[in-house]
Length: 189
Image 1 (cartoon, one colour):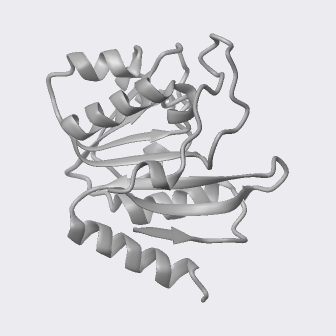
Image 2 (cartoon, one colour):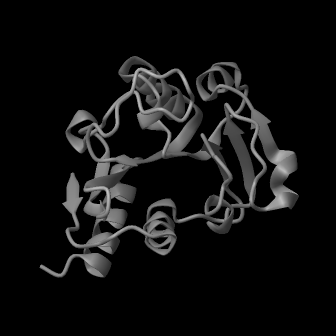
């Protein structure tokens, strides 16, 4: 299932608005933010419990949440993780992994959470052979993960000429709720 929303340009506000619908958080739920960077938005979602994981040592924007930060390779963290979460989110992470490691990440997210959410550029963009963690190593499209509900924003990065998409994996009933809410709010066709 896929929704394409042309004409919507990216901002933190748009990301938050769509993420709120997708995540539908509750204070009695837990979230693991994988590849969290500085976690500018996920703490605002409204979960009761947060965990932040990034391969680089990061200072989170919300300083009081720093105690919930773990510096680790996200795949290694999930391989050794002895708990599950209501949600695992990987926003602007998947493109930094090779295809093989990206599939491994998705599999581990599915093993450790009830709902999985990704946000990534639409297709290959600035792929590099560089070993730096900020380099892009793969490009993803909704067609690559057909079991996920995708919300495609083809004009998200207009100055860069690249789109982005959210993809969520959860129960069919929850996918239907998300689909209907996104269509009602954004799809003017």
